[in-house]
Length: 236
Image 1: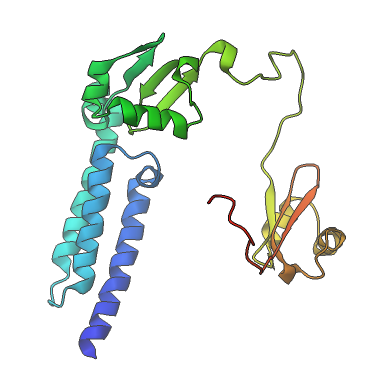
Image 2 (image 1 turned 30 degrees about the vertical axis):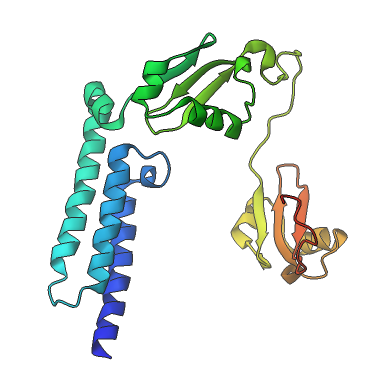
């Protein structure tokens, strides 16, 4: 029983340590990771798992290792922010895979991509015909950026010389049946107003609402809790 409690304590400690170290390294660890960020993240996770299941008295060794890896990530982030050359070595640099209708075989080879994989990435991003692409660039984080040809890109309001209203973020005023009081106050409304809005859209009480949003013009959109399953899977 003592060992189980010790493992629980170490597990909670490793979770807290990972949280603190991730905050220290920044949100980049959770979004656009370079190869080094990826390696650091996996290593810290492995050390944390070892720390959580270690029955030895000295848990400071894996914790110290985690801190060293985190500090290394912070140091390299600082170096890459100061030196373009270091940034290219550590984070990589963009590779042009397609330009002006020509596929660059050597760059595909350098990126460890074959033509089939490249075409798959094109389809995933909505381009089923690569003749409609002007340029495709493999970014340093491993993602491919696509520039469609002028005649095949989506029509914009500026193309039609139209003036459109600016969109703004919507506020989540109800989440999982609970009123988000701070968000509601930010919209300039109160709970009485909100209850009237959701009632008009079929919700008897806030517990019936999975999500409710309010935009800049005070338009409320309500998503009710639906318990039944979808009768037919349209993806099969």
